[in-house]
Amino acid sequence: KLINDIASECSMPICYGGGIKTLDEIEHLIRMGIEKIALSSSAIMNPSLLKTASDRVGSQSIVVVLDIKKIGLINKSYKIFTHNGKESININLIDLIQGLEDKGVGEIVINSIDRDGTMKGYDMNLMDIVFENTNIPVTALGGAGNYQDLTELIQRYKIIGAAAGSIFV
Image 1 (cartoon, helix red, strand yellow):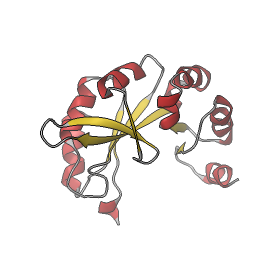
Image 2 (cartoon, rainbow, N blue to C red):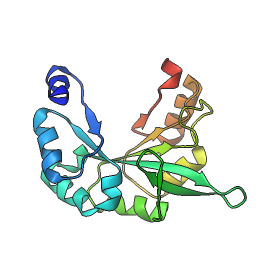
Image 3 (tube, helix red, strand yellow):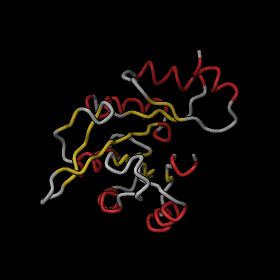
Image 4 (cartoon, rainbow, N blue to C red):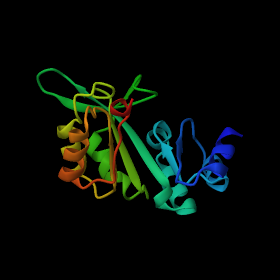
């Protein structure tokens, strides 16, 4: 009911995510007026859902949110996590990103767990990896500390979005 109430009153696009596991849930949210559906753990655990949902509601409505964390002190690499950063997934980040376009994903949100809430700037090394391996529109999340961080990210990558929270509070 709350989602329906918000969608019926809101005059701008809404993206909703959290606990979505089935095509029926996706279609129900779209019928209520939600424009974009954000999938995270279900996109990784059930990748066929991405293609099915994209075919049914359009790729512009399917967003995959990837929670990424830097692993290792010496030979640093990135690992994908689910369930709010609690469970690591043994899937190669580059392989996953490269496969999303074929599955009909219309947008990717990259959340740097290491930078989220720190206000130390976006993880540009992580964003370099992402942009070298996809043509899908990307939104960066985690680390914005000032307006210059937003400007640098947008100018460097010409991206669809730069998420920020702490700098506005």
